[in-house]
Image (cartoon, rainbow, N blue to C red; front, side, top):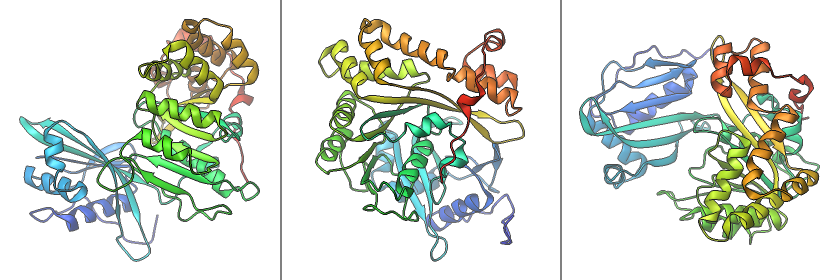
Length: 399
């Protein structure tokens, strides 16, 4: 533990709960090692400490106080947006002492809380000062070796709060630190999460642009893909594929010589492929033509989920598939309707499914059998039929 004296919970919060009180709460959370802070109308403030929701204030915050916090975070139209049903995602930063910055990813939602239909729920995710090193995440060698192609699309998939942004940030950190191959990098995010100011680079400093919100930047993801094509970039991160135009832009960047990274909400490799095709096909062109372009651009799909760890914390379970030229040709020969299931079958054959990852974590004593089944989607009997190739999961050591 640090020699700095840590505050004792629960905290006393002055009436009115403005910026000073909010920043004090957030600084306390960061010093205690909390992963998340939850602030809701007519409720206590809670810190997520070692995976446990911990009451952190002496009193509850009133509705007007939470509205004040929403307004100072986002602006005067925050409460109006929330009352109309629009969620708000953004980044916030505090500077508690000279030379120190602590960042938070924020999600604000309208919520019915204890009978109050106009309630507000705000969640703060504490962001590390720098992205984690790829070695600290114990990412399998095959994923790391295929995460930064000269050109091609790398998709990181998962549900909300599955660590997608953290994994991609560690990949970008690896690219920045590679002085033997300096590459010009830009990110487009909503909101900007990790910053890379403290990482020395032999290439131009990484450029980060916010999409939407009140912090300037670009209006939408389609604008991001359009501008990225004109910037002579080597590596581009498009924070999330939310619509067909964005997916089409990512495909175009990958096919025109860019290493393109993006995320999508999906829980299997085959599902990620099918969902991207379905979203892009809405914009026209048909499923078959979209599938052909997507297959031609893909370099790898990685799916990640975070499973509760025995003793506290969480462990990353991953599923992945590298799309080689041979595999592309094999998929091109299939009918469109069969491609996603064929990709999922390849994952199982390669021993890189969520089931394999969950079984390994269970056998290594990291997770319970119950969670191995729950997070892989397999029954105990199905899990027992899996054969592990331990070498597949050997971690990459980047120097």
